[in-house]
Length: 106
Length: 120
Image 1: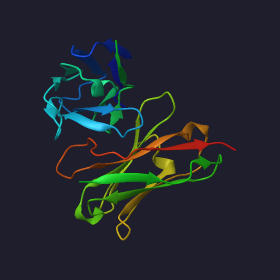
Image 2: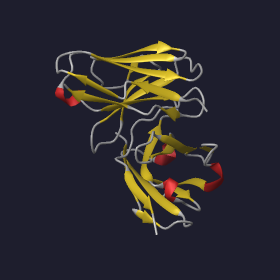
Image 3: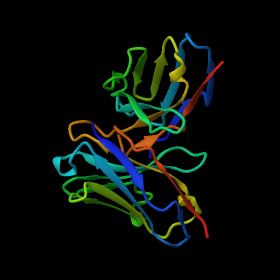
Image 4: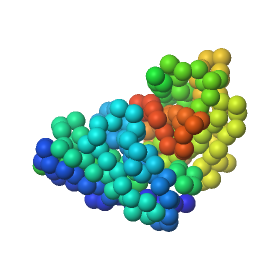
């Protein structure tokens, strides 16, 4: 099983600033990585797939990078609706997820 | 667009079978796609349970494979999950999700989720 580790567990950022979230895989997953956003009470929403491709309808302020074992999700110019939980998922092997990063308002 | 909605009992007794259904709207199951179940125990990370292609091929998490069955009912445009011999460790929010045939194994969209508690 490929273990995904996200950091930090909680990130406090002010609206308008940028946030950088990290995801590390226990072994290489190539670029087979997705990022999701989950707002309270809502279904998870796909943001990024293939490590860096934005899903349909996702604003350009969301960007993903990385390959192998180290990945980053960057959210620029944070808006109120961006404060949520984010988790990564690898699909190089059978799917496994990170434990999530909570992005909260500073 | 595809929309998914989970339904089923919110409370299941230990040793019994957990049964959930995901109703699909905006898309015909028989047209394709993979149909998946994912769960999140309280305070823990998401766990992929398994996926099924509309034709019947199934893929399960090795750690759950012996207790899980995913099936599709194309006449009702629904797919289902059964987990046998449940324990408290099966208490979780259960999500259904979809994956397009033409994409890799990530999930879009997801249902809202349903909390299932295993308790006597």
